Length: 329
Image 1 (spheres, helix red, strand yellow):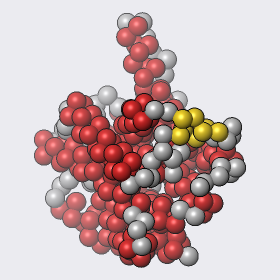
Image 2 (cartoon, one colour):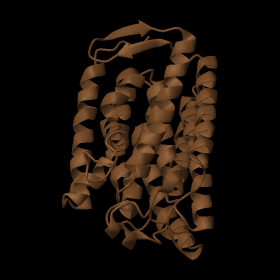
Image 3 (cartoon, one colour):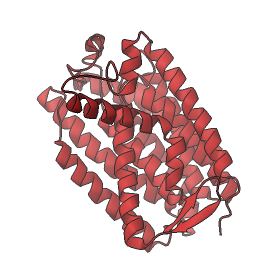
Image 4 (cartoon, one colour):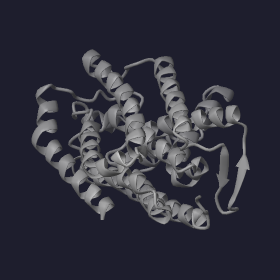
């Protein structure tokens, strides 16, 4: 019941805040998205669409987890708050990036090095906190095989930091079409809700449900044709939320399945750039990341989002099968 209430409350707050307050405010402030010239030419029509819309669901999630999860927090389980604050740090990094883009009226915000260092620092701080709270284990659970691989703490921390930074940037890269990052992350939130139900992680379930409600409400504004973009504010927050949940559940390897779209998007970009440099100008994809390739092949944005979401849903269902035999102490 708590998870249902968290989902409904997050949906309501996000929808009301977005429609009545934030979207009109962003339009008044002329906080429009600048479109990169290297993207598909028809994306130029999206220029000026308000960005930083991720503030909608961030606020909705915050209100929801505080209202629904306060009792559990008083009883000592603050895992939902830790994951939220962790994701929020990334959201703040994204906000600074968005603010620079809006202020300069170009699609260049913080430098890649600045974002990387800030993200790495946030990841290390979160991991140290979770270890201090006893909510982190160096036992790496392997789905389907139902075994734990014991790593040394330094190795596990380095691996976990890599997972966090990689996930955050992969989700950010996925946010390239109307509703894409939002839609493919909805099944991921559902996976964590189910996992929380299996193992009695009520507070993490509350956060996951609030995430689901916020994304569903944001989709009202972000579905094609988008009235608002989540911006780096939203996409970095989402990446932090997904990575934070995976680590809080001690399931970092499950991101290979639930984050399959994020991984494919990132790999397509890496492959394209590497092949381009090695062959002095040749390309494997018509455009990278891969959602742009399908656009160039004639697929509509709606079709791409629908297919990618279906794939995400399928792999999240597969992930559930992979962890159902896990025993949590």
